[in-house]
Image (cartoon, rainbow, N blue to C red; front, top):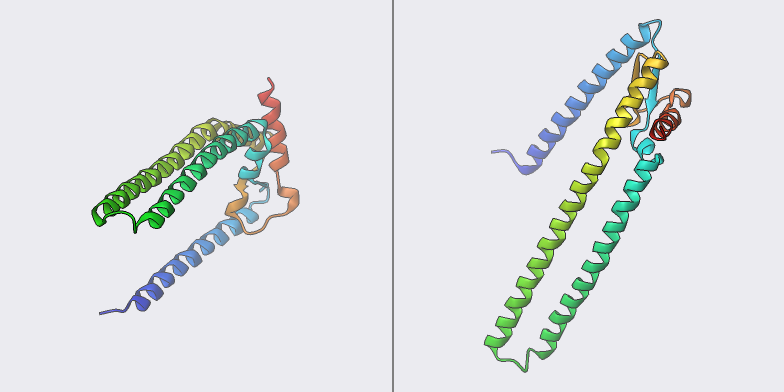
Length: 185
């Protein structure tokens, strides 16, 4: 039987092996790309580009407003629940065992209900973010394709997909400007 440490080492080895393989494939494809005499590659920081657009800023502001509202509401409820638990602790000597257990059970149910509401709220905000981000990302994709075709690029890569790239190859600002220009039409 293998120990947990051996299983962890085995898992890490598999992940590192896969990483090395992917790096090798990327290296091979980059060599092939570089060998293409007419290769022109651009880089875009998609996350930065989306955040820099008016639509992205509005989305961020809307989500932040909703998040802050919920955060304040939940902080108040959390404070109230803590106070109720503290009050029960202070009064426990005055209550019968049965009354204390009943009150503690009610408070635990209230705490579980609260935790469920927090989780549901997080899920709702994440869904709203995805829903708001989808049309922006779709339009961003169209703009990147347009810039790629207009600039005769062989490839435009996401900044997160590469380890290093020349600042001269960074098209993020160009993409943002084009996005904003088409948004005003």
